[in-house]
Length: 279
Image (cartoon, rainbow, N blue to C red; front, side, top):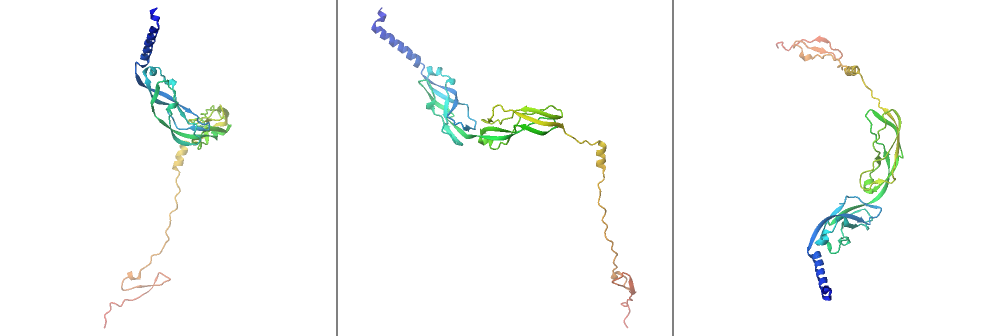
């Protein structure tokens, strides 16, 4: 019964307290790196972030080793408050470490990256046409095509929808049989983030007439005849005839020809006296 005297109880209390202190503080302090998810908070419904953000950030937690051993990444997230964003813009936003909930005795020493760049845009609705996308062999063609409904409402960031005028259906493969056909299909929504149909589970009815293309084939004999057909040539150009003109000074010196301006025949011989001796 001596063990239960008052002074003995105090002694046991001190021993138990020392043991507990050694269990908590005996291993000292340390650090632990964890990849924790990012959680956007307060984003307005009519706004959207269009750039690709990392899904996680790396944090370095400092504190008692005993507390660090029990810390799990799935129990922590990094909040990012964007409730003040109401207009399209590009901003840089830092993390608020005070908003991270950690067990007592632990604190965040470092975050990588410590800030993010956000591209904010407003969500708009665009009405665009539906274009049927046929997957057919080359010798087949479709005529008199109709799509019901012919228009569709697309929602998404304004920067991605401002140039969108039409959307394609999934590849259509009607039976290869001449005549009318009717198919049902969905459309291909653009792959950009936050772009979607305003209507839920919209389907489209496509009607048309399938036929083979008419191809004109020439026989080898016709090809040869066409290649041997002579090309008509222009008639030769005849130069105008002109009679030769006689030069009177090219005749012998003893006689010259007087040319009549209205005739080319000589009319008289003129004796040459240049060789006679002077008396």
